[in-house]
Amino acid sequence: HYNMNRIRLVWSRIWQVLCEFFVSVGLSENLSVSIFVMDSLRQLAMKFLEREELANYNFQSEFLKPFVIIMQKSNSAEIRELIVRCVSQMVLVRVSNVKSGWKSVFM
Image 1 (spheres, one colour):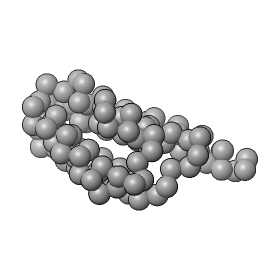
Image 2 (image 1 turned 90 degrees about the horizontal axis):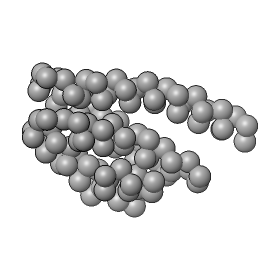
Image 3 (image 1 turned 90 degrees about the vertical axis):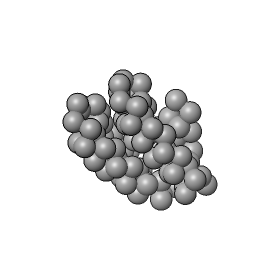
Image 4 (image 1 turned 135 degrees about the vertical axis):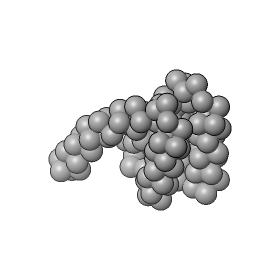
C-alpha cells in the first residue's frame, strides 16, 4: 500500500512538470507546434484512459488539466476547436473509463 502511494506521489510531481510544459508549448504562437503538442497530449490521454482510474485518486482530472488551461488561455480558434475534437473523441472512445475526468471535460 505504501509503495502505491509513493508511486502516485512521484507520478503526480512528474505530471505537474509535464503539465506546465504541455501548456507552455500548447500556447505557442507557432500553430504547427501547438497542434503537434495537442495531438501528443491527446495520444497520451487516450493511453491513460485505457486503464481504470484507481479509487480516491483523481489522476484523470490531473492529466486532462492542460486541455482546460490551454482552452482558457489560447487566442487561437484552431487550437480551441482542436481541443474540443480531441476531448470529444476521447469521451466517445473511452466513455466507460472516464471517472474524475468528467470535471475537466465539462470545463
